[in-house]
Length: 467
Image (cartoon, rainbow, N blue to C red):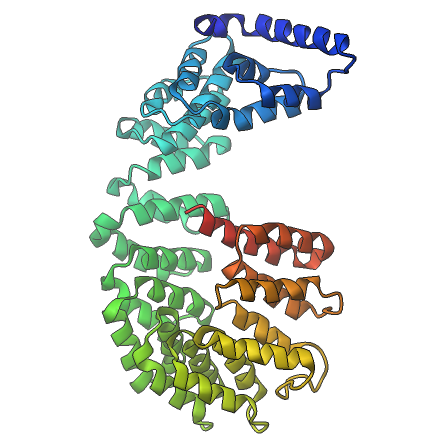
């Protein structure tokens, strides 16, 4: 039957559905999409599952398509998919290509390349999707032709498939995609450039050209890629951008330098922090915190303590201590929190940094706020400013207790300050588990103003559990 499936699939569907309907009527049941899905769930018949992918109801088709690989992970499914790709029926070929893309066959790309010259755009796109996971260098020229052809529906998969080849001859093509407002295309080009790290001697100069260019989108993308490539030859240029470049790029540069990390980056950041001007020291403090350089803890604390320093230098130094501090620093921060003459911004940052240095101290601060014993001078104008600082600090603490306290903010109906809820959601994004995806989704339904923040947090959690 399997060998003839591509020829008789429509007849098989009619027969199967007819038998099911008769059985259902005999049993006194009505055939509904739900009952079809129920039968599918119980069935171990691969042919029935494949045939259900052409069932008239969309929900049944989608269920069969989405779950068939989990149900039948072996080579038998791949064999059916390959046979269906040779069918004379265009619908069967599309199903076959879709199935082929879901299997783990080592040679799936060998069959996909035969469809790159198809007259059916859908077939080409499914073939491209297969080649994204099974790169074939021999089709590079055809992929370039597709990209130059202007068919927008094929562009993304063609760019992804080409990017997997990591051919340095395509460097300028990827660079030219960095300014695009289409985030998916830009990400695909960035991923391709990251894969070209072995050719960093060619890639880094081109990326630096974009990083120092005029297009802000392109600058940010190039800086991100430089961080991911991690070539220390870009350090001087990135530090130059941090010190003299567009302040709007500061966070991007700090993250890139943090991603490169290593002794050389840490040394340059420390030297800059100790000897640079105020702007340079502010940026260097952020880099030290991004990397986590414990040796800098004493000098960072000295910058916090010196009230003659510019406030943002003090703040950046305090934030950096979340990843650079130690027990002695945590004790000093705790003492600072009770100093009513201190700038409230420094107090807030101190509470947050305790989460990274000494979580137990942060939990004590939380408990004292909840009991009403102390607000550390932060709530004179009302609101939940002290709790917001705790919520941000909890984002440094990957523990069940931290997650429990963050969830309590979302469950507390008395918490009505948007900033607190946003801080809570962001921290859950940093330390939440897969279970928190449902918690965050529920919060999104109740607080539509937080939709973008919640979606970002969910993506952050999903990215951790997909790697």
